[in-house]
Image (tube, rainbow, N blue to C red):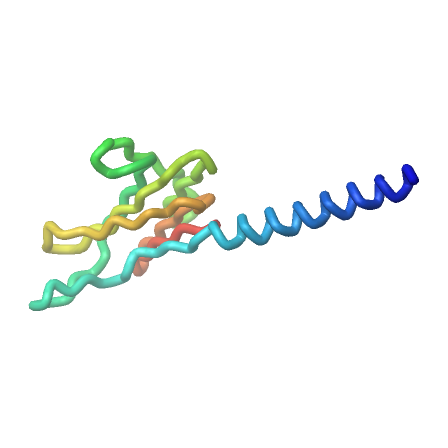
Length: 117
């Protein structure tokens, strides 16, 4: 009788771990800045990126680490990061929610930004 109870508990734990891992995988998006932005008149290249802990209006910008020829932002799971993509010669920018990302990286040639789980 005790052996069956242990088997049921072990089975329940495995089932719960499977559900949690599937749920975590589904909630971890990959976000990237578009390489260009069109304002209807011309196309502008991505030039700058900023990563914030929370909404941009809170002004909590994060400082990247420099690794080889990349800028890397390591994110905590408790953060609700926002990524701001800025483009050449225009005051417009795109703000992306990167919730669930573990890190973001920016390469320079060409400028590309992506946030990964």
